[in-house]
Image (cartoon, rainbow, N blue to C red; front, side):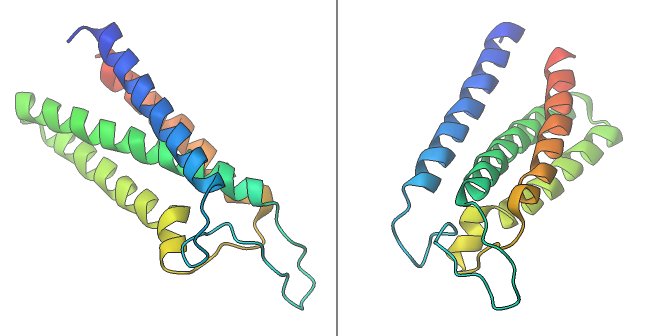
Length: 144
């Protein structure tokens, strides 16, 4: 597959994942599943969060999961071609980060009736940095 087509496919998958996550996060109506329920602040004086911070966190988390799935597939393909120990390390690295992102996804957290609270914009800042790092890895993996 040519590199432009592959890059276009990757961008389309990531865009579709982001749109799906945003749509789902904004339209969840099941109170036992939604990590975005209105919260009442605890009595210790912590002010309420903006729910949109968690929607952004959901979108970024979903994009990171999509990037990691693509990276795992690319690294597994490279390993099948080269049988390099370094590449198996990259596969393990990507799988571990994928597990971390899956288990910290707001969808999974909400599935078990837990909710993030009190983080505000700090809910999604680590995800943005991870997105930047994964984008560089994906770019380098597709380029070479």
